[in-house]
Length: 278
Image (cartoon, rainbow, N blue to C red; front, side):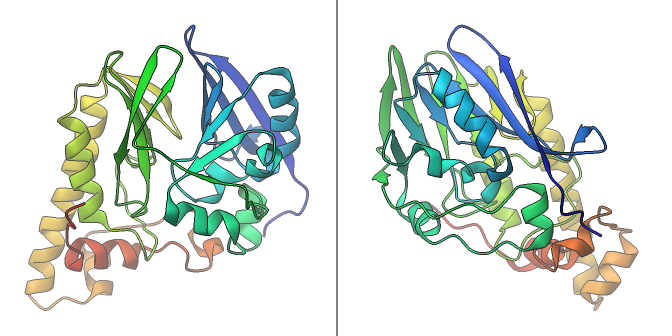
């Protein structure tokens, strides 16, 4: 069962003279269910955290000068606090993300408990291909897979890359949403591996220094699962048989997601989805 009482959490963690990590979450039994990171880069905010922490984010924003907000993708844990910046700060997002921000879906009881329901936001600006924050110069990089519209922010001089959810949180990804393209996710991770990066700023793990091994572990696992699943599929095994043979088990909360996530979505994607050139 999902409890109706929510306690929001926010943790402010300075990383260096340019970057502050803002971690938001809903508390359960004294701990965060799952933190999501927003990053304050000088006077700009990359993503804004979850709606359940909107009061805490409002207080943080009131104590800090935030001139611009840059949104990586439309999922509720990343955009939940956009409403407090509307009309006071420029909010940048690409066209597909803007559509969701203007008319967010109703996410349901479990996700409202974990992250909260975002309010619609209408005052939005199209994100440019490049932008500057003081002496920092960022390139906007397409990161399809987790969502097809997701983007990241690369500062080549500092070798910083803000990768949103491009790199799966677990090292052994076993569940997916129906609109996730897992082969595309792998191709995106391989693209990140080819970039000159010293620090990966991940939206659920925070800063990761020397991230190559972290990323490669996830690439290798998915490719091995894909290889085995294809062999089983070609031998006539069903999706359910493949799941059982590979002993793929979901997390405790899987049923609570009401089919927003599924092991079957993951298997179908590794079997049938193709990489789209972007």
